[in-house]
Length: 246
Image (cartoon, rainbow, N blue to C red):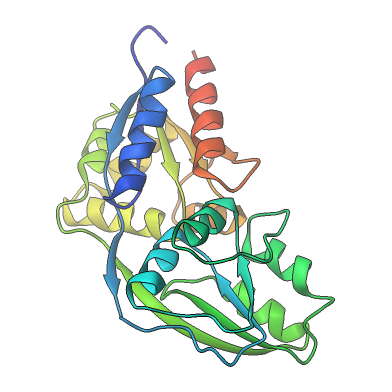
């Protein structure tokens, strides 16, 4: 590309967005930070009478620490290394991280050991049903605690306008909800169809098959699914594809 590629990033407006922007800048592209997620804490804490407790995000780790949660003898599971690191940073021991950093990967890693076990799943209000359904099929008794709700920031949508104008070279969607909120923001601006059309000329990268399916259901063509469910891998592979496009 003759010009510096523009890459939209939809991380929550906290240190994750700052880190994402720095990561993209280090790769020679122009980040378009457009937070599509904001956290509303519920102040709930996980139950402490379970055999296993599962956390699925850095946000959840931070919120349970702020709320004063104290584990007992549970096996503490993290869906991936970022969540595990966040738990450890807050002083919690982590007993299990699956090799595949997805809900289905976590189910597969636990399925042989949880028949009859009580499992507490502590996460957002938009967690994948794959995790609950898979563990129930494995014979576990499941209880879900909603630690926080994910909402769309009122001022989001800069990237939708850029896409509609044909000025976006790539986009990194990290969840189905970021796809849905992107389209909500575009709809509010009256440019939904133009934004979707603009993405056809951009490299669209996503984390995970569920996010790809959500995008496809809404008419967004996905160019790549990250080979590992981390933002760093998603960003690297999306930037590489955008840089090589021309």
